[in-house]
Image (cartoon, rainbow over all chains, first blue to last red; front, side):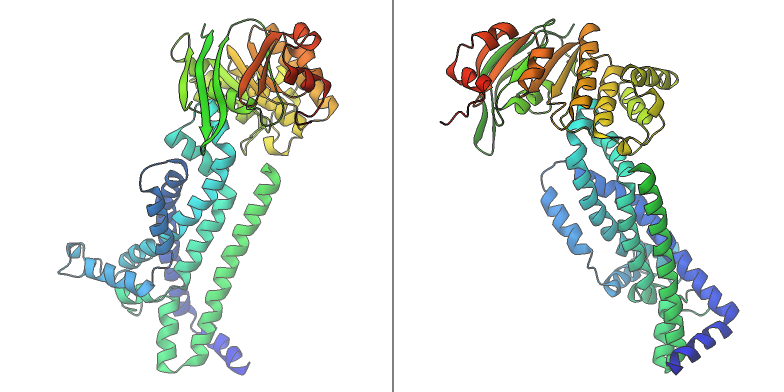
Length: 230
Length: 234
């Protein structure tokens, strides 16, 4: 108990430095989730609505990719962005951009797979009515995404949880450079390895509090909207 | 005019299980057609085949004109409402039908007035009662001015009051010249709304007759039993 109190005290003594780390964490993870949502929802909707050869296979792979180990994603993005790699010319390695890219790859399957499930359930209910009204393909998919928006919040939150919690990918492609690419999780790993357990613990609590607050806010919005629209 | 609709030797099977077997029919403009039959007789599937939601596994379904899709509407047993206002549910259908944006709201409001939902236009559709939702489904169809309206047991889940309201809207469709094709197992409703009956049994059309004749002198034993409310397996 004492260690937690001390840790939290130390965390708040960090002030400027701490808030920079928190801000970068949020910036990276929220950007990644935004990108993954923009790509993942249409992908999930397509898989929910379209029937094509190999669809089952794609769904199995997508579901499996939800369990992608962050370090492996980090390694792949690292190879891609390293100076000799195919995207080396971009000079993204060890920048927040690289971290956003890695987390996007990590989160995309989660959002797409969960969205696919939610939208397929909705499609079962809507299909005949929408086809009767003449909505097919892209038009039906967009209607479905908009109408299932409250269930999709859960998919996006799952993605956000993953992005905020992972350390392996951002560590490898970001490098945990103080003041440049250091985020909450890499800072916790660093302080733990340095043996400063109270500070690591304190940072951990701040991270948990932030994730909790984001989820609570999303839940409130969702509940209010659901009461309003049924 | 997209009618008549002709079905030639139409069959439909699902998972190897025949549901519609060799149905040949012509649906002509004019009389309200009631598709009668017990649960599992294939009424819903036959309507979905006609409306184009299902493709027949054998046989041909032909409208007089191509592009008939836009001139028909269907109201289902359980109305499916989008998570938006009652009005927006109707304008959505108008948008899909290619009605210019400036026209949609006016037409949608007129359709809502027609079914007595003008006051509830701004309400979220999903919080309306079952009867109101079904009337909204009818308003959505009304706004499209279909030549043919398919109704699949539209009052099966509703209380008598709501059923009366739905039936009066269906009569208004009929009065406006829309061809009604309705599946029901409610004999009273068939009598109230129908001009002719197509009696379905085991996926086959056993009988087609004017409404009065069907109820007075059914030509098949199955139809006679159905009218009397007897169970078919005794």
